[in-house]
Length: 228
Image (cartoon, rainbow, N blue to C red; front, side, top):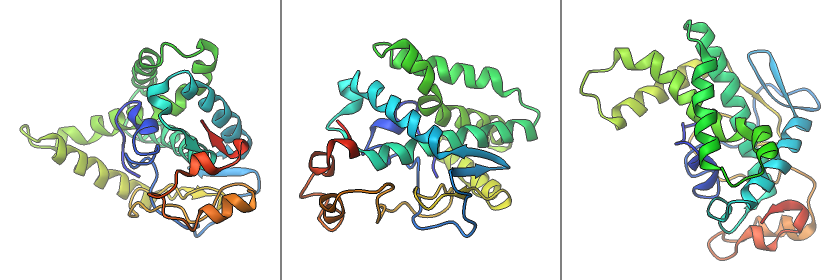
């Protein structure tokens, strides 16, 4: 999993281009039924992911620039899970390093509010973790790692150091991901999913065999399996 820039984590390259998710396949340890992922003993439920995914889609629809040409439902659900996991990870790293994470998260959340000011305010408050958690995690990791970097380190150097730190953290604290979702993984190379995350129509399954450059999946999927 790579850190994404504020808001862009949900908008660029069909939500995954910034690397909010990476890796493919199943975790060695399977999540309990009804659990989408587990981070350091904290469970993220499938129900929570589904609820936030529906509201996230409504917020995206309020912003044509973010919605773009639309997203598959599985992409939205995977990204929502990744963002919720990132918040839990940021909380854990902050606690480990005596960082007060609340004001750091509050700044990231306010940035998200400003960027999505046209969205319904109640819906936006509900899904703030989806739009703020990447920025929150990056800010927390920066507080931990930056003191060890050269004073003249550029952004690329810093980002590489953040990634190294997160990979090591995950190795010590594996994130358990339900096989219904793309694995939350800091170290594996990014790959396109080879399965859908929910029961789908025959047409949707057929679309998985097509060249994504030749067909836009979000247009061909049934309305219940896309966000457009």
